[in-house]
Length: 101
Image 1 (cartoon, rainbow, N blue to C red):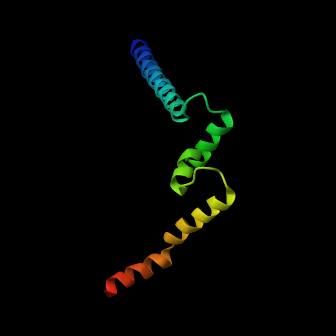
Image 2 (spheres, rainbow, N blue to C red):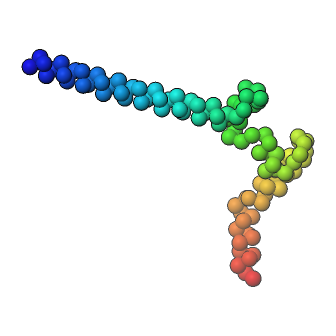
Image 3 (cartoon, rainbow, N blue to C red):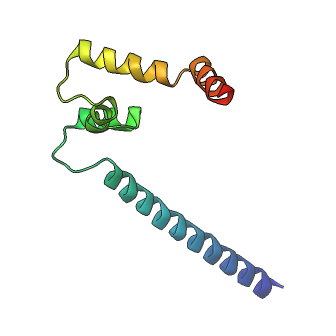
């Protein structure tokens, strides 16, 4: 009886050790993937954290708004144009106008 109990304990500990090793490997892979997503090391820590928080880089935002320099008035104007173009009420008006023709 003691022999079987010892075999169960050994088998159980082997299963737990394998599961722990697999979890550590997955965590290391996830950590490396997260580091890769943060970008190259030439950016400052604040820039990398900002990109993670907002989900978009400054260059991507400038490309979406179609601006080259960071001018507050120009950015606000471009934002308003895009916001109005994507407004739900406006889309329905355009859709009904197209269907009327």
